[in-house]
Length: 145
Image (tube, rainbow, N blue to C red; front, side, top):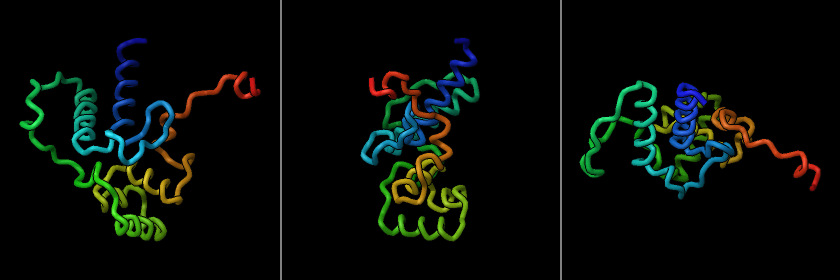
């Protein structure tokens, strides 16, 4: 695997993790998973931006000393019942996933994951899951062997 292909694969993996999606299976991580923690999501997006820019990372600071990055306010936060209701109203009214993401200050993948959990999207309808299709099964396991 050449460096360019490896970097793009690393970038795809980090992006999936930051979006709360398992990079191999395409499954959405459960809400209590560390990948839904705001600090972890920010760190992953920081790594994504560094990979995209080709720059070397700045000298690491102590965890508590690093500056807060301007980011979506609700990334990694739990969803309230009211926010779920509002998302369903917006989605049913025809708002785009991008609009919903902006309104809720969450990622596109976070909106898709929530709509899937609430029964409005099927896993195969998610655009984020399609980037990481489930691994192919071997013929023997499909044949019951």
